[in-house]
Length: 556
Image (spheres, one colour):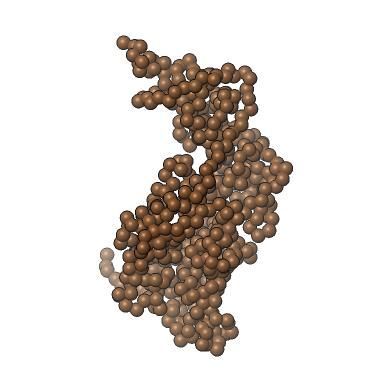
């Protein structure tokens, strides 16, 4: 096969593919340009998931009339001018690729004016070439309008998700930069609906209130720490406030939004032993350090960085988070109530904790009637059966019971719904709101009756009966988080049932009465698959009578 030089148009499309992955990438690049221009107000508008339209307007310094066309040439930038400056970058952008890459895959219009210019400059580009240029009135700043994204790149267009899913990615980008720059007033309009508006008063807690909700913002703990050259600041959640995934962990390096496994490990290390397995903290952490100590030129979209002193950064973040957690109030233990059962024999025995070195393989599904003997570490129910001793994980067991009960209701098309005497108000983040919009019919079938209440506030009027006795707002958020983690932004009924059962199940560490334990064991005995939870984790371990006799030397 002959070697040939690629055509300039093809080179532009390939370069654009590295920088512009989806509509949210366009929003990110344009927001970064606005911030570098010193904007104190940035408005973002998107239609059709950003494919039909993305418009970013700011009140920054603007582009001089003589340089507007130059801004759309590859590797044209005002951020750096020499090789030495590449090692100490302080701006968000520096490659000079954003605008030409966007123009290569979309129709672009820019209207901009600097302070000294009497009129603004308007430029329209088609296929990366200038189609129209003229002077227009505009206050100081810049407006970039992007239309028909990927129209000439159908291969990229077909891999985009639904409009609501793409909108949620755009909302996430805007939310992240609003948290990185709380002194900047951000507004986001998605398909004509105001999804986010921040005050721009410099208070991070107020931005979090707008993105994640007032209740969450009030519980967050302020953090401040680090060494002389490495400063760490932000807000983190107390151990009592956690999520089922890592999407609420935001990291900024000199206010640049980044993905960093190092910072992720450092933050979660501080919570070690404080959170249940599978639960993750909420954190907004900014690390400030000399620009020469980081390499930001390691990713086409500038989403990753490298540190010259990784261990020092790791320690600074971990210690700062630990310091904040010392402020956290001591959590109180919640007790889950089960209907008392008079038919089940109750025991008041106390059992001393003992280590064992073996776990017997469990036989086929089916569970004999067990006599409850007590509770170990407020997590495991100790039961005696005809085949020996059973240690039952109370959360996994209750999860299995609830899963089969909800699944049976779904198969009969009769989900038990609990109406709320007083509607509960929930404030959705921009991302959560888009996920709910895409899945509201499916969630309604499971009993979630939600109606708009102005802005991003919603009224929760009914919920599935299974979660009625729990934190129903948290149950809905957990569902929305699970949906956000799926490939197409929707969740199958099976996963919804699993999520509801997991959230409603009694937790490890909750003390249960003998009656509550007996009732749970009775319901577990009636389950079709009592030996595993819906996720495949065992609900119990079984120590047979023969194994016990062997341990005590009663067999030859």
